[in-house]
Length: 431
Ligand code: NDP
Ligand code: HSE
Image (tube, rainbow, N blue to C red; front, side, top):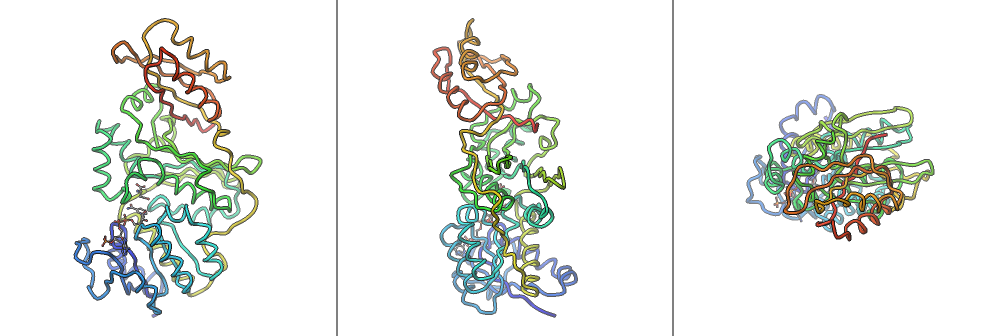
C-alpha cells in the first residue's frame, strides 16, 4: 500500500487533535483512501509540554526547517498560527514542491495572493478548509459544489468565540469577560483573543470566502469590521423586545455592477431567521447562488475536533492530488469582479441606542437631524431605565448609507440632550 509522509508544524490545540484523530481513525482512513497517511515529523516549541496525546519523541523537532529539509515529506500541515514564520514555512514548502494544508486564516487573508501565486508557479496545491468555520466544509462547497454558480450573497456566523460569548450572555447572564475566559478554556479562541472579539478573525474568514467566491484577493483595508466587545446586556435585551437577536455576522455580497461588499459587525437579525438560532460555538453560513438558490451550512466553528476533521479531509485530498496532479492549486483567480464597494456607500438598516435627558422635545431634535439627512425612522421606543436624569431611547432606522449614518451620529452625539456617545448596531432583515 502507498504511504504519504506528513510534516506537522504546530502541536497545539488543533495540531494535537489532528495527530490524535489520524491515529485513532487510521484503519478507517486506510480503508476509504487506499493509502496510508504517516506523520513523519512534528515541529513545536516546547518538547516538555503536555499535549493530551502520546507522541513518539523521535518525531519531534523544535525546528520547522527540519520538515522542509526532509525530502521524504510530501505534505506539510501549517498549524503554528504565526505570521512571518508561518509564511516563510509555507512558501518554503511550496518552493520545494510540498503540498501545504493550513488553518491559518489571518495569513491567507493578508498574504493569499502571494501564497497562491507561488502555488501556481510551482504547481503545488494549498488546502485550507480549516481556515473558515471549523468543521463545516464551506471551502470545498464554494470551490467545487458551487463552481457553476455566481455567488450572490453569503451571510455567516463565522466566529465561534464571539457566538459563544453572546450566547452565554443571553442564556446565563454571564459578563463578557467571564464568557471569553470560558471560550478560551474550551480552545475556541485564537492565541490572541483580541482577534475574536474585535471582529478580525471573522473578517479574515470573510476575506477568504469573498476572494474564493469572486476570484480576486479582497484587500483587508476595503472591508468594514467591528467586533462584539461593545455589546451590552441592555442591547441584547432591547433587541429582544424588538424581535431581534444580536449576532456577529459576516456579510458578503456582489451587486449588479460586480462590486463586492464585505463587512463583519454585530447585527440585529430577526428572531425568526434561521441564523438567529445558531448558538454557542456553532457557526452557520447561508449561501445564495444564482443556480442553486438558498443553501445553509451548520456545524461547530471552532475547537480541536471539528477543526481536525477539516484538516484530515485536506490531508486526504492532498494525497489524492499527489496521486493524480490537478490544474487548480486551491484558488482560481478570475476577472468578472475586482472592486469593492467603498465602505461609506454600504447600505444597511440600523438600531440606535441613545442616552438622553428625560424631557419634552428630545425626540423632535433627534428626528430632525435624521430627517435632514433623509434617514427614515421605522420605530422608536423608550424602555424602562434610570441613569440619573437620563433615559435610554431606542430607534430603528430605515436603509441609509454608512456615510449618512456617520454624519447623523456626529450631529446627534453633539446635542446637549444626548448624554453619552450614541450606540449604533446594524440590522439585517435579509430582504
Ligand atoms: P495553538 O496556539 O494552540 O498551537 C500553536 C502550535 O504551534 C503550538 O504547538 C506551538 O508550539 C507551535 N508553534 C508556534 N510557533 C512555532 C514555531 N516557531 N516553531 C515550532 N512550533 C511553533 O493554536 P491552535 O492550535 O489553536 O491554532 C493553530 C492554527 O489553526 C491557527 O492558525 C488558528 O488560527 C487556526 N485555527 C484554530 C482553530 C481553533 O479552534 N483553535 C480553528 C480553526 C483554525 P508549543 O505548543 O510548543 O508552544
Ligand atoms: N477563534 C476562532 C473562532 C477559531 O472562535 O471561530 C476558529 O476559526
